[in-house]
Length: 426
Length: 186
Image 1 (cartoon, rainbow over the protein chains, first blue to last red):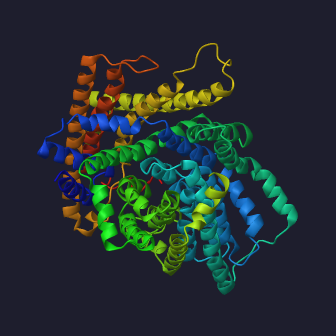
Image 2: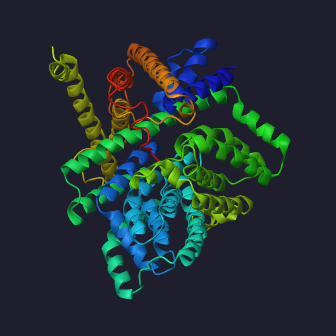
Image 3: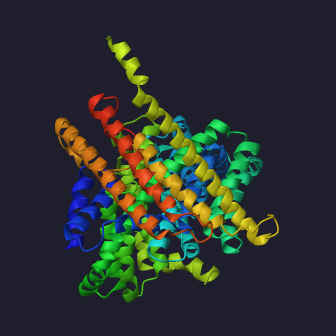
């Protein structure tokens, strides 16, 4: 009863355009008020306990670190390195966009931040090199979602907490899928480059070495974060805090692009973005409390098993559901709402929680470039001062199809995801 | 009174000054919360490897950093409201005619304020229930009622900012209802 009222109120308010976390809160307030068998201040208590988490502190830290590096001049150096390595290929600058987004994703953990940081450099560069604006914007938007797949990733942290899965294993599981996506999209870029014959950067060892030297400090960042976590020196949260310190030192003392004013703005953005995200997490946790009380995840699990006992069929059904969810909701709220519902079904099907988590993030990453919401599309369009429609073209559909194909490979062969965690951690 | 004088009196009116001062204070306190949260977490990592590094037992760092994060996040709600950056799903509303869109946005804004008010009341009830038992935090020995009060403060400030936002969008028409929401998190 409570869950039904909650769902109705949530979707009505959601489609009214109200902030997602308010929709979640009002969706919980109304059934608490109507049914009335639990004191209402439990809502406040649950809200507090959901954000009073040391592990969740990694999220604001990754946000601050990502901003420090993107505003501290790191993105430009990463683009230069990617250009030196793959810029000589046909469609080189498009591949550079994917590779640089992958590098940047290893620092920031955010999709929108990746589009903004890499796109602001690549959009003018690609347009100047003769790439048409439709291909350019579709490429920048599609490359951005690598930011949440390449570890460290904020959505993977959220999934790990929601589904009680090791964040270290999830991070490790994201590597091969990210490489698969870069290769699949890169092949299309080469095809496009050969067809349109755009400008290519000549390859020289000296240029590559120079770019490598200039970007070495940025490349050290993921090594420090992931190396620290996997060697047991830091927890994920501490590693994220170290990333903040490292980003600040590089931005202030080495690249000298961060001053007090920039730092103030970075911190203010981090406060707002963390608050927006964590309030969604808090709202979704209260929703989870109501659903668990009414045994909804168990009912979903039983309903799924009654449809089919095949794990592959479950994966397909779950991913269709996630694609629908991801078309109108951002990755973070979708994960915090859906992970507690779907995760209890993984055990009966014998599906690895790490594999499912990474596939879920890839799926919701695709949602970041799926109209009508697709935040990456909005950011990419705004970078070129073009209307949103320009980003929605045949190149975008091709990138999406390739990403969906890669996701299907992961669903059928989850070993693609679990190979590295099994080899290096378990 | 001319329009210019009216605008001037509005900009320097007591509420405008109060709004500006509280806004700046909220910004500074939330930023400082995040700065100290980072420092305490770094010290935590350092203390594990060099316990004699600090002249006192550093057992409260994790707890302090968690509460500082909560302070920053709760104050951040109101900054998010001020910037209109709390994400919503606009695609359905955009399908309707402009006049109806405005009505839906106004109703949504009022409902949002009402939700913040209800949450503020519930948080205050939670604070009172904790004060009764005199609960303190395990390491810092800080009164938990004071920590829980941050929730109340966050929602009260969010109500204030949401009312200002309503005024700016629907009365002064200074900005669009969806302006600022394009900025996403992930």
